[in-house]
Amino acid sequence: MLTVNNLGYWYDQQANSLFENVNLSFAPGESYAIVGQSGTGKTTFLSLIAGLDKPKAGTIELDGKSIAKIGLTTYRQRHVAIVFQSYNLLTYMSPLENLMTAMSITRSSHQGDKKYAQSMLRQLGITDEQMTKNVQKLSGGQQQRVAIARTMCCDAEVVVADEPTGNLDEKNTAEVVRLFQKIAHEQGKCVIIVTHESEVAAACDHDYRLAHHLFTVER
Image (cartoon, rainbow, N blue to C red; front, side, top):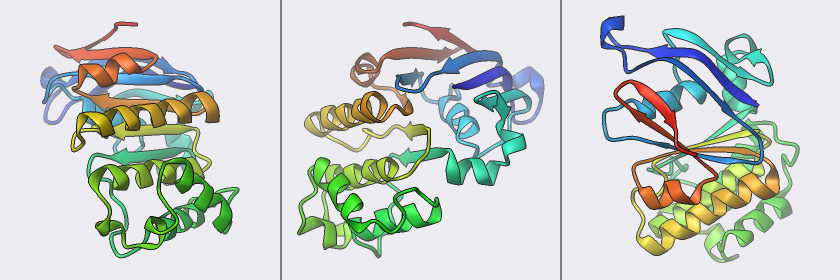
């Protein structure tokens, strides 16, 4: 269980906070949408729960332990996987090499298991021929699938995604959302997606909206 307790964040002074006193819980095996207009702070919120930044107030806990005490570097390497809109793949590598490298860096229980990495890529529609090509030769939708497969190969309990469908067409968007649901429901991971797309939010199990410095639980 990932929980945020009285979370607050601001840049210059507290009077101009993006949000304050946020109390939310995120359970394993469930998917969550964080919805809000540009500039409301939803990406900042995601960076906090991903351990990329520190809150100005409050705490973030994983299974009752502060991620600050776990250590943000350890938390990012062992407990959270991030999917970016821009994919953030190693562009000089193939899809298979990207997965093998990620498993090594995060010390995954599948570290060094080439057959496992190949099976994950196949499950996400990446062919044997495509998985050995340079990732830049793949389409945007295929690159995003590789990025998602990378999270499936690691042992992270929490998967966070920042506008993961922003560069995709309607068909690929639906497929990517289906894959995130697969990760949540079949792998038992907690999946948190920041999005401005109502269709993506509707497909998630829960919908949290950020507006006027406050989070509201829609469902």
